[in-house]
Image 1 (cartoon, one colour):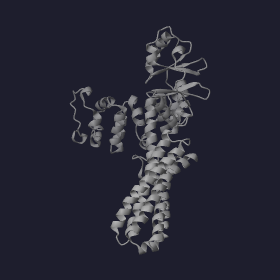
Image 2 (cartoon, one colour; image 1 turned 180 degrees about the vertical axis):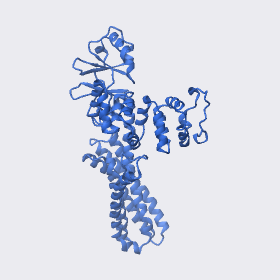
Image 3 (cartoon, rainbow, N blue to C red; image 1 turned 135 degrees about the vertical axis):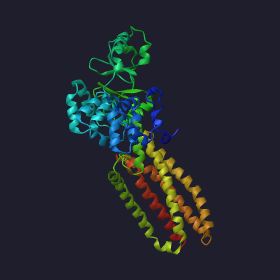
Image 4 (cartoon, rainbow, N blue to C red; image 1 turned 180 degrees about the horizontal axis):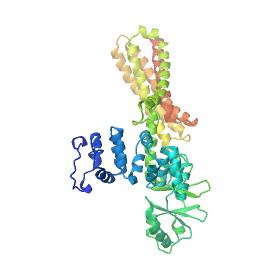
Length: 468
């Protein structure tokens, strides 16, 4: 069912619960129609939508004034979450128009981690003014969260959690939980701490609900439950979630004191961000490159790597220039030359993608690098042998004047380049990782240079030796 063919014309007496899935009906034109609705009716409709649907609706607007009208009509309890779903570039542009009163209204409805993210996205002066207005306890929580790097466990955590003391019984925990627990979203675990707030263990709600009332929580708590330090990288946090299959992780400081928790929904965002970042960087793009950025900014970011690629392309062209006389005598070389370089580039990219992803997931380490390197080189040799025979046969039949000699030359060049591609595709990211450089950032450009230079040099060099 296409939204483009379904204008929104709901009868005034229709109940919102009877309205079909809004997100499946809205086109960008209909988003503009929504912005012209009566304010009360519009607020009711938007209040029934999920934050992610509201974000999609804002993205679908073609004009800034229509988007602004919708933002004014989104209830405060949903606006913050919807704004945080938007691309960073658009988010920053929209938040420049928010004053302290508007920001305060939004922040009051957000969890501490989302509130910290929202305040970091608005103008610093506005954020400072809002912080001054917050309750002291809320201000301390948000200040602590904002003090951590955004890409660490401390930057991901939220302060809201349910903790109990080691001397409490199950009955007492349940009493306190009924009184205060409803204020905490995604409540899956109870955290057991001692009088110094040191984390002693973690207790799942399932275990708690079926335990005898007089049992002490310390007897039930899992003392080996995984935990993360506030300074740990967010990629490590994602790996721990994946390894232990938990719904939330406690965050402790260097002393072992419980200071927050990270929930699975935040880690899903991290996994998405890291995967997107790797894809962008393998294509020599900035991890901030998105569709909402202005043309000049995007062009500037991409232009840096295009310039690097231009320099490497010139290097490959210089290799070709060394064999200008050979190419002039045998025109067939100019026809077949791109095949060798292209096959090497594809083979190297395949290896590179596997290695970079393996490094990101922690499956490829320096401990098993030798085994990984041998495997990828072996794959390059096998592929090289197979495709050398194929292209050698094709070249012999395609240019019968040179026949088997040309076939043997291109076959040997193909073998050498696919071997080099496998070796480079594995060695380059491992070497960059050893140098503390992100392998996804520069590997592709270096690999392209290697496969082009080796491919052209091998093919033209062998042709000069055996065909002239």
